[in-house]
Image (cartoon, rainbow, N blue to C red; front, side, top):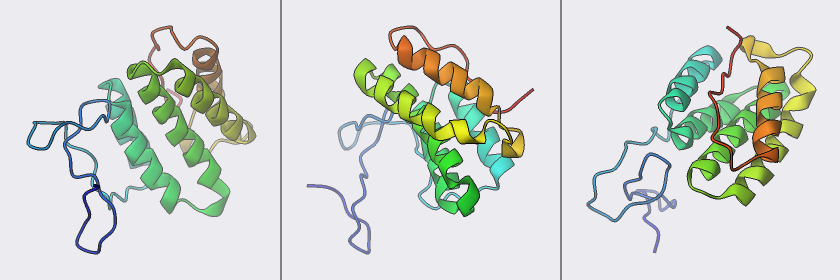
Amino acid sequence: MRDRDESGRPRNARPRDAYGRPLPHGATGIPTMPDNIDLPPEEALAEAQALLDADRPFHAHEVLEAAWKASPDGERELWRGLAQVAVGLTHLRRGNARGAEALLTRAAERLVPYEDAPPHGIDVQGIVKHTRELAANPHDDPVELRLTKP
């Protein structure tokens, strides 16, 4: 049975490991992002990058997903694609190459329309290239992913 919050909405209150896998109740886990995280785009990118750099792609996904849900219509698919990249990296870290390949492929296709005019300094071309390489070779150890241009 899933845990529920005060309003009855499903919530998984179990602690999680660095890759977002649920741990037994009472175990010490890695803190997740608050459900109500609301950061401006530049801060969301910086936080997600710090989490990726710390090898915590599941948590980066939570930040990027919050940005996706709060973004204006013209950027929604961009943020959704970035969140999918982080989930794809999570699948890689969990040893699920097939899931990673599927998510990374979808993420790259979702990001392509933003290559010509990426907002917020996002390195869409670099992310698409990196993501496609990982999708083609999911057993390779992913190299550092940079969300923004230097």
